[in-house]
Length: 203
Image 1 (spheres, rainbow, N blue to C red):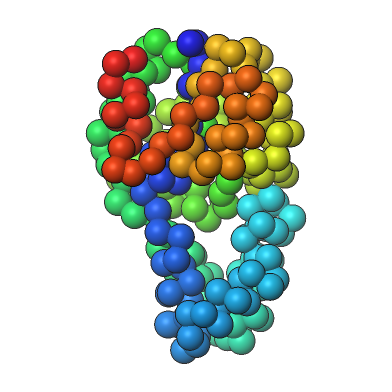
Image 2 (tube, rainbow, N blue to C red):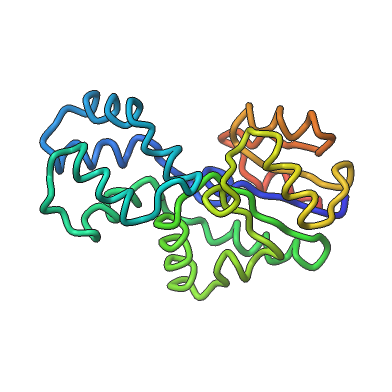
């Protein structure tokens, strides 16, 4: 094994996928189920995370759908970032150790607002940013593709010059794992209560 590819959410940083819906519901004084239905109906997440809309368009879309034109950008960003929970420093330290032995990459379905927040947290912890921590980062909004589409894995392999059989991929989503496995990547399904520290302790 020569290369390690990591997902971000629930692999490096714990996340709460319902938290943004809960927070936007409170801000809009709407039931959570209604906000969740709006999210699903208008496919806000996928449009933003595949780069079809930028930050401003995403925020304006949220204002329009939740019928509140007065929300400042910071209000929307703060609610959106509640998906991110506390970042365990020991996972970052382990990744830095692995960097001495392996080529390391990040592959995440994510949004620019989330990445900026994670990097702010890392900087506040006196740690490298994601772009400094990994040889290359592949964000869905940059490559205009999302896991589990096989094209996004091929893109990473081709761009980084990786051999699938020499590459391990760590993700918490079963569909993402299955898609990577079909391409010959050694995919590892990270499932609580285990973390990457457990899967990588002997590497």
